[in-house]
Length: 147
Length: 467
Image 1 (cartoon, each protein chain N blue to C red):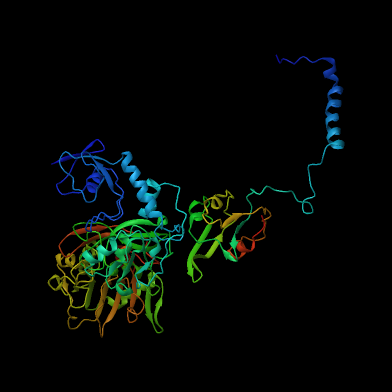
Image 2: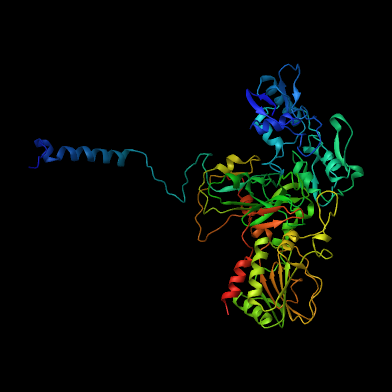
């Protein structure tokens, strides 16, 4: 035999509970601050520690990166590809510096491993695109100062 | 066997062994910079100083032979304090350019600094800097990184036989350089990079190509001459980046020559034929295996054929050919070829006083043992020639005959050939070679065959199966 829970008359009518519930709904609707924002027009402030799109920091127009390969070594997604080279004003520099963002998991370990403070993650989070893209060195250098 | 006690452990040794080697045989590491097992002992870096009971001062382990009943402490506070001080002293002028330096990852100074050094530095003055002079095509010098261990000076003096590196000035200003700033003359210059405990002498060829920790290492044997030096091929993603010497005290000790060190480069040469090719009206053109084998068969079958087996093939490959060829070609005569002027083991000899031999192919001795004779000239009436080559042998001039090449060829070499069936070079196969002393050495495969090239056994199988 199925045991039915015992309910009092007030509970059976539901009316008091409905009033309680509606009271909370009305309170939030009419008096509390709005949580949503009008996204493209309004922006939320993110912490400086947010891990968004990568960029290469430069000092006096010269990239900080010396192609030491610590970021590809530490990268768990293996999305960084660097080819090192030599030029007169810099002993070792990255000829090619590519980040395959589709593979990136934004863990920020590259930023942590970098001894030259060269690879950084900015607060940019809008990275949707209509095609698959690998970010190249020139593009990553242009992204400076977004933080 | 005499015994001594190191860190409370009883260790047996052979008389004359120094404490570094004795400790190493017991699995105890004593750090050192200036000592090298293949060079004389100078005991000037002071890093290997250890405490011996009944001796008032610390003793350098490299210059102290072990003695019966000696009680050695390598972990005492005095030893550790000394190691920390030496590390700090060496790092005073060492630049912090590990991110740029090619040695990082396999650097003694880096490793020992991590293991025995202090993470903090008290030195605040400006570091000493030098202007680097060019040292020729093999070695790139960065004097700023030098810790004056003088291994390179001793190597030139004792092993290479040319006293070309010297230390000029003294004390803090000491500079290691070549005499009069001349480029390095020795043909063993690559070893300077191997023995340097820091990144002062690095290979120009390997400069900035790859970091040391990415490389996968395969023990192999050099095919550069009939010495058969032991070396290590270092590759990543089927691309070889460098070769370094592997220690074998019976064959090459710790050294290899530059010819052997850079010999691997032909494997990735742009001119190498890595796809089956056949002769058409417009010269040698790339094709596929079926057509190339058909063309090769047309060229050879039913004719008087001579087979030339390069003495750079392995024992296994040569044995395969010796059983395969007579079965498939009536009246075939088989010769081996390799270096011009070296037709048999009798012609082979030392090319210099260190390692190099006259025969520039590795397996001359092995092929002679299999009963092959050296190639002098084509027998009269020869119509077609099958040439098997591993990558080092020099193909003799063949006139008025049709030639089919099997193995490693580059485009200019194979220009006149009727067909080329690409084979594997020494880094792409495994096998056995027999050096001039009769020493049998096995080597392992380092990379997969480049392009469409195949093992000789696979080529012969296709030859036998396809019509």
